[in-house]
Image (spheres, rainbow, N blue to C red):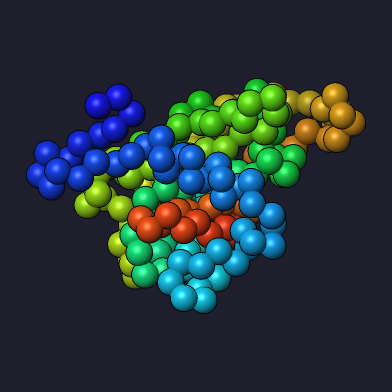
Length: 190
């Protein structure tokens, strides 16, 4: 069962390669299509899911994210990042030391082929651990490397300034059990 995880109690299999493929195809869609991907009927991204980040540690910088499902299907995949955001560039200061998730979720770093961008991806490996409609799930954690002190701004080879990963403003994508994906922006915790 390479690439699949089995929940012995229900017989359900989380098709990891399928979910990643759905996510990658959704990212390849035109921006206008991605921003209004339906979940059930006419739900928009901001109406279907919400992600909140809070800083829970300083040395090293550690963030915890909470995913809220406002849609009508369980959330089975959660992704931070976009190939268009400078703070999601795969530079040493932005590559997390550790990505962890709540019980039943697996987190990983995804580096785009022939690109300087990365994504942080969590997938539910057990069906009963998906974020149910109307529920919230916390415990998605990202531990970042300690930033070196710098006297001057550093730049990428294309001339754009390097930016520290700022999770409370990062773009996110969530995918539902039915295959629909919606996009939004992570909000800071109050």
